[in-house]
Length: 145
Image 1 (cartoon, rainbow, N blue to C red):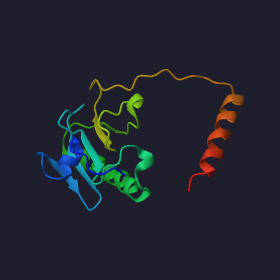
Image 2 (cartoon, rainbow, N blue to C red; image 1 turned 90 degrees about the horizontal axis):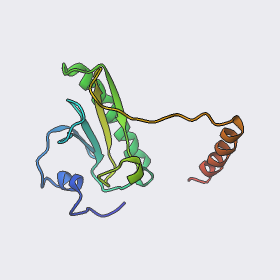
Image 3 (cartoon, rainbow, N blue to C red; image 1 turned 45 degrees about the horizontal axis):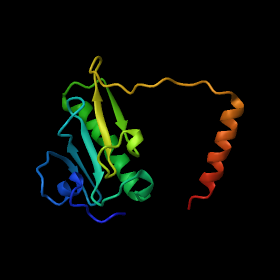
Image 4 (spheres, helix red, strand yellow; image 1 turned 120 degrees about the horizontal axis):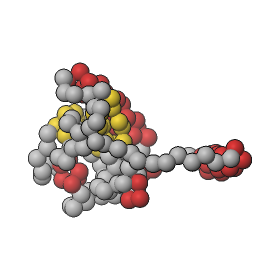
């Protein structure tokens, strides 16, 4: 965990120094309307404490973020706003699209033709490569407490 950062917009929201449109709050996380929404109903869920990357977030806090994300997604579907699907989006690091370096989860309501895209081209590696890389990750996984 990093101490509260004066220039972190989410830390400022937690501290009550900026206005917010609150959807949910509890002892660990807040869910607020994104002020620059991708689609109508776009919500951001973030911890009260300042963590930068997903690996910094304690499991209990990440679990709460995921649980709130699931419930918020259901609330969006029940709210009456247009919603044919939901994307949960987490960007971990600058190259992954993280812009605000305070851990956060996006809940993005989707409708056909809404313009939101995650653009990529899948590869088709040989099974040997999948096995080799999977083994490397599995070994690293075993070292995590």
